[in-house]
Length: 317
Ligand code: UDP
Ligand code: MG
Image (tube, rainbow, N blue to C red):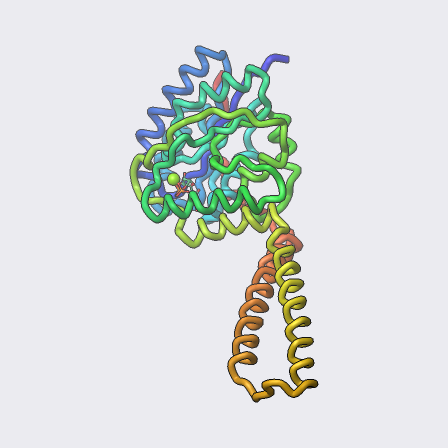
């Protein structure tokens, strides 16, 4: 059966400043998709507990346009859980995930669709350039190169959530139930040899970034610790190196004692050894704790989000 529909999933948190521009740009793209590809569009806006007028503005849109669906979450759950809510609701033959701050340009969607129609099950929008400058941009760059080296599997490190997945790939992705979600990683895990479409990432259209720095750090940790066991193995290697060194050093000290060479009660050596090993141990325990906390999070088996209401006009036609 030929593909008939496409869903766009978008998380929204306090975006009133740019919603009008978002509506007009998206709906223009929808019209072009309908004429060029003959696909029915469904726009799944996930309201992630916004405290401004975002919900009212979106509800007004949804009440006049049956293509727009709003999933109103019971509180702010965060970027990734909001996307998960949208993915579970979306019904399209393909699903596009993108941020709602216009950093992911809607005008790129037709290109993603073209690549999908050429047979690609997963299409990733790869950033040719990144809008973030200065320290934040540098940290992003550092994070992505670290993730590339640490990750236990090959990951396209320049991409964010923006991309398209065929229904098959979406269903596969929805089978992954882990709670600490890093969509670019999960999407890579699902496979299907992702195709790439390049784009220039824009500045957000208005308003401030809604992800706090702490959230971004947590997101980065999710990426590394969910897709890599290398930090655990690093502890083992470190322990091995320190132990080998200590063994030979102990042997050396013993020989010195036996032959009575240079036996002075020292202060420096034990102090340095204690401080160094103390530091190594604390870091190691921290890394173990990181995995343990994640295991605890997973075994609680809480839902990823709670839906307060789904707002959608019944389809008139
Ligand atoms: N967002 C969300 N919940 C949050 C934080 C952000 O749904 O708790 C949405 C936000 O409205 C935007 C997208 O996720 O559509 C990306 O957020 P932001 O631009 O703040 O993140 P950044 O670009 O800094 O990674
Ligand atoms: Mg943004």
